[in-house]
Image (cartoon, rainbow, N blue to C red; front, side, top):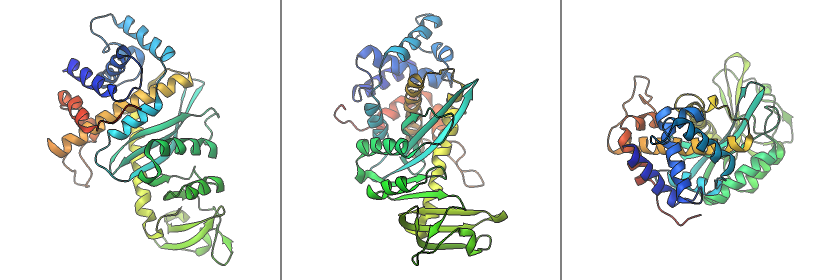
Length: 347
């Protein structure tokens, strides 16, 4: 089924020109299939599955040449990733940062995922060069501007982030764009009530599991807050422009980006095992891994809905994820993924 799978993905790339000519589109398709087969992103491992008609060393040289010389159209890639999503309607964006070390080299990625329900995969990302430090407002707004350019502001239903994404300029940017958002704040973060009094959430002396809803000002921006007391003197402090009563429910959707990181970095694609140390090449590699992951999740979702239902364990969670479900009936993966997409004019 491998030639059929490559042909299906190549046809898909005709409607989204990530690269310019047919030979390079076929290469991208082969590289994606190589990731499926090897469950790895190291060039030496993928090369063993790239082209059976030539030696593995020649395949590896071709991979290295592609990453060194061929530009990738990230706008076309983002448009394709959105088209792979099932259904219509509002989409959820989740922001997070992930990092790892390869020797003395530090990889620091700021990434935004897009999706709805449990179906989520990367939409855009940037390699940060700040010694594993946090992103700044300019980094975040640049990625969000790119997302809004791809999706349009009317398709973004929610933006979710954790405690790393705070600050007056950041909150003001989200509110000025008219985006509903929910962010997790630290317990010592100051809030200001309607009477102009500033304090921290610990001043309320909430008992464990006790919750309080309020309208307040955080970092100069008005919104709603939901504060829940946890064991050990900790608090779940959520702030956003959505209804305060639903902030907790909305924030729980952030688990999808954690599951995405687990699949990209470890189980499934082993992105963390790459030896690439050039930021431009790493950004390109993340793009091809994201495409492979999106095809797997899209195919697994289609299989779950129409062919083979994923059962539940006793605790209520699925027995396997959508991406791993797609790898079981390997021959159907490309066909289902191709059926999932909706054709649109080239970018």
